[in-house]
Structures are given as structure tokens and as C-alpha cells.
Image (cartoon, rainbow, N blue to C red):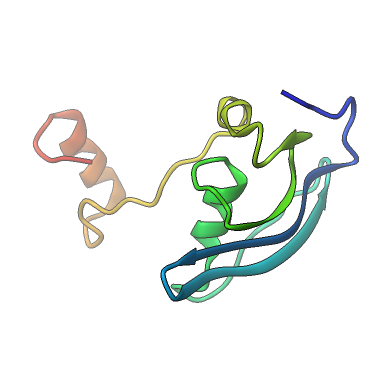
Length: 113
């Protein structure tokens, strides 16, 4: 675990890239987000937003690039990043259902989430 004492940036990445076969899902992303800043990711479906967030949170290994998240190295310290970051994956069980209905079904054990 190699956390910076007080990182200037909450997110500081260079060249983050992820490929799935011939498909380039995230292509050499450079991003710096200062501590205390709120940042949103906007773009059309399939533009790499979720892939990038999953790489940043340590849930998906980048094919290229480097950087830090909360002062932890996104490659070497992915387990610590997972402990520090709250990430909720997109709901896929029933995309057309209202989220509260899907959650209620999950709580009652009627469908898989």
C-alpha cells in the first residue's frame, strides 16, 4: 500500500486504456480531479464511462496507463481503493422496472440482482 501523505488530486490518471479484444472501451484517458471537487461523467451509451470508473475503483485492470485514486496507485493498490470507494454497479436485472420495484423484489428473494 503506497498512499501519498496528502494527495493534491483525488483522481490523477494518465493514459488509462482498456481493450476487450479489438474493441477499445477506454482510450488513453488523462484526468485530474482536485480534492474536494465533484466530478460527473457524461456521454452516450458505450462511450467507456463505466469501464473507466471500474478501472479507477480497482474492479477492472487497465491494459495501459497509470495513476492514483485517493492517493493509492490504481494498479498496485486496487484492494485498498475498493475498501475506500463506494461503487454501485448499474442495475441489469430488469432495466425496464422502476428501481424501487426491482429492489423490493431482491429483498424478498424473488429475483436475482
